Amino acid sequence: MVNVAPAERYTAEFEADADPGIYPMHCHKVDHVRNGGVSPGGMLTAIVYEQVMGTDVFADLMEKAGYEL
Image (cartoon, rainbow, N blue to C red; front, side):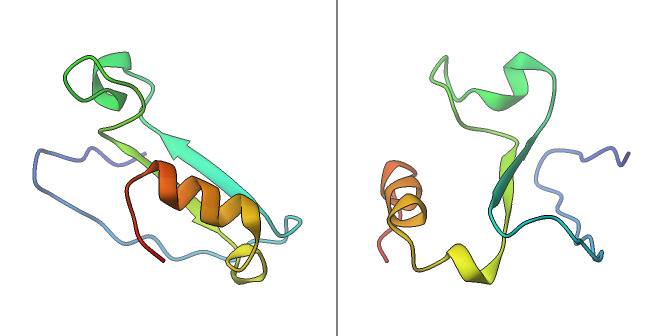
């Protein structure tokens, strides 16, 4: 576990042998995964395998997060 202060970021490098997919990661403090009472937001990220980046599921998640592909 790593404590992350406001405006800090860290890079984690690891090897994974899970099936290709999208694996969300988030802080377990409810206030940390909300932005002004709106969920999801805040300290929320995902591990995304390259094999799924061209899928409809990935495109849908990116659109919901406000990103353009």
